[in-house]
Image 1 (cartoon, rainbow, N blue to C red):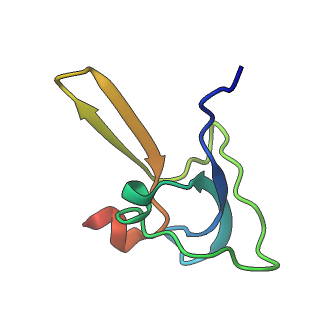
Image 2 (tube, rainbow, N blue to C red; image 1 turned 45 degrees about the vertical axis):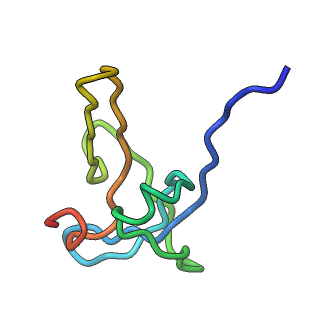
Length: 81
């Protein structure tokens, strides 16, 4: 039986200190239009979330269906918008 799995890929993530990382994010047209994602940077380290270090997250809540969508925001500019 087929399952409905989300696709993901590595994208370039810029932290608040302007350091470039590679972070895994969803491949979704609607999300990629607002999250500031760009193709991965070869040779950049991979960002791993830990209790002390977290990536910027956007959370959208649908009050009709009570569903929540959570995804990383890859640039400070996209997060400010």
